[in-house]
Length: 383
Image (cartoon, rainbow, N blue to C red; front, side, top):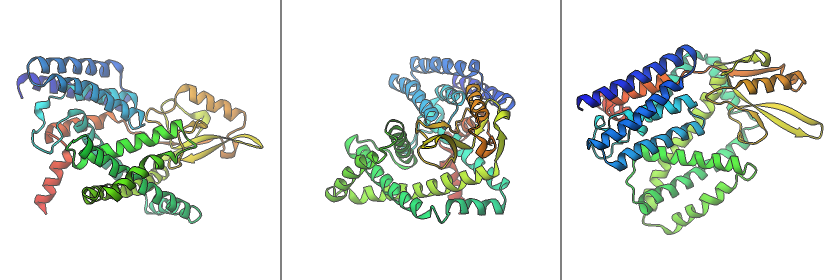
């Protein structure tokens, strides 16, 4: 890297450090910081192109694709608006020359920084939950997941969803390799499949909440065709797909179920609706139920399905509840709708995410790419 790129990297670190400071101290990231990084990032991409460091398509890709990735992370409920804008800004300012240029390595800054950020947050959250939880809490979490009355239905639904994910993965792999001729392997391909599958589920649940079976009609026919007739590519497709299904089992059961239930037991606390404050993050969903005896409101855990149903009054979001939502809850509480659960809701502890983005940026600089590659090489050497 030259002196100019060192300067840009230092500015990105400085801006991200300031955002982390305000996020830790005040629980917010100011627009003056994120917009400055975004405007600076666009300017940096133009300068990179003018000095010949990158091509026009690379500069345009960093701006548009980086923005799209950040928006998707916000839309999927992973990042708050300020965090998404911060990620977009620093990903555009990151010098491409800092990433290792070798076959099979990801060299797209927005993806690399996001991967390292989520890697850091995942291990921090996992360790934090297990350190804070007791042995009794972990046992209770398993009991809640494997409750006898719900177990047969949950297992049946789990098996169907697993086969649906296998079918979807096989179709996407075939499209990537044999239709679009894109050589995408390893973690990037896995991340793409999971993101597409999650986005497809969200779209169907949002627009057709009562017809979720449509996803089965979309993925099973082409999967059966590939399995029965595409004999030349069947072994490679099924091998790759089964690996992803293994990851699905781990993520869906261990992370989505066990860790989330453990998190709700360990890090959540009941708060009176009249004591709620702006920015608090709910640990459960509040759903309006219309029956013969009138309207009532019920609470469901974060594991319940159909959270995009229009009857959902409130659900957990990264940016927390707003003043308007609090006023609406207070009004319903005054009318007696929340008396069955003593006018209380479960609120979870929120972690400022900007420091993790800063950590992801630092890991990217040190590893010159995805940090998991450096870690895996280190583990192989030690073993």
